[in-house]
Image 1 (cartoon, helix red, strand yellow):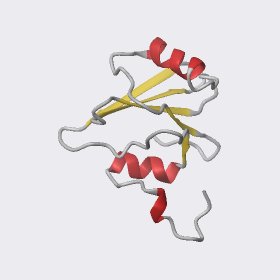
Image 2 (cartoon, one colour):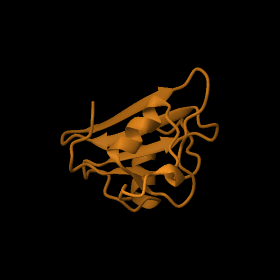
Image 3 (cartoon, one colour):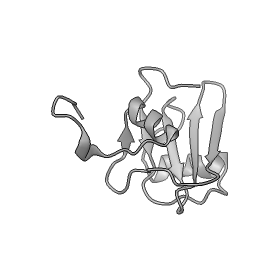
Image 4 (cartoon, helix red, strand yellow):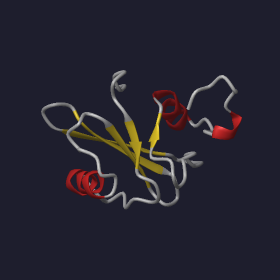
Length: 110
């Protein structure tokens, strides 16, 4: 499972109640992120302890909710202000690699 080149990845900053399912996450996308939940873009949510992530996306016929819970350690979930990420940053996040914008090379476009 990977997003297409045209798929944007949006982040719900702050903690999300991981008991939320399809409807609750869709409401957050529409109300808090102010995005169209059936756009085909990916929406990433994280719990307060940063041990669980959920991804919500629409595939054209229905919603998918994918979840990952770490058995140890924490996700390097971006904090406040950042509302989107690149596919590379998403790969780093899901692989346990620290995402730190301060370390981007000068040639890296943000």
